[in-house]
Length: 403
Image (cartoon, rainbow, N blue to C red; front, side, top):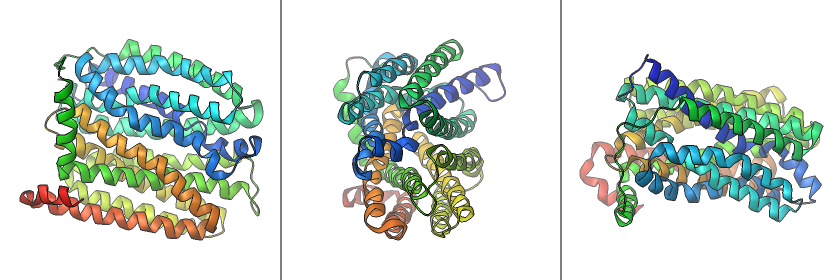
């Protein structure tokens, strides 16, 4: 297996991180554009949110099919197909100037993105040693963060100065170059065993994972955590472009640099899980995120930036621990298990957008505070249930049925 501090580890971990970086650049490029696109298409905040939600929702809904395909045909083939499809999906956006059709093409982009996201961690779980796996997952999720930052900054600046069409062209070219690099560096699989002709078996795997409260509770935590994290940034973008701040799209997009704190804590999560209880880490991350939201309530740009730094730090810490928890505790069909986690994660992000944007639209930041605290409280409840279930295994089936 691939061990830490070897040439194979460096090549594989870099290739997977680069692929993750490309995926998240494409996924979130449109997020800082939303206020500008709302003005361009004369649409409400809720309506324009579909440009972000379409990609995350279709990504979520196709994760499991991609994972099932990888169980039959191999992780590496699925990941490479996904990455090489991105430039074509991106260029297809240039064929329309209609909001509805642009939303549909963003949905197609989400399907392409799902292939890599669905199976990358399963590839690591099969090819990496246990120690290398925990460290590689931290680096992989850090690349998620960096990709999200870069995509958003690029989207904000490129759209303001060159227009959204040229922003799409530039991202498509970068995606093609990145896919070629990943194809060259990522090692072939050695420990993968295909399961061809077992479609019903894969369905049983999905049902089996959902019946395990130890897995499903972590999936729900990840979904609600992401619903809060990504959409608190969305509403902050709308807040900053409106009076009394009236900031430009390019300047507003710089708030996503606060994601860098999440890059650091995602790395630290691997060390936490080796020394402490991962569930206590999820509680800690949730608390840091909630405190950040309240700090950002103050009408001060400095307070908002500090708040966003805390939100990013806590959310990525919780996400990394929950993600690794599912991968570690799934004893079979790991690709399906991690895909199910990500399905919950991105469905949460999609639906949470409409929830928090509605809170913003009808109650401004005070409405966001009230709505978000409901979700934070729910995460605490789920962490308590996960802890109780972990240390009382005979209650597992009962808890799964209740939820």
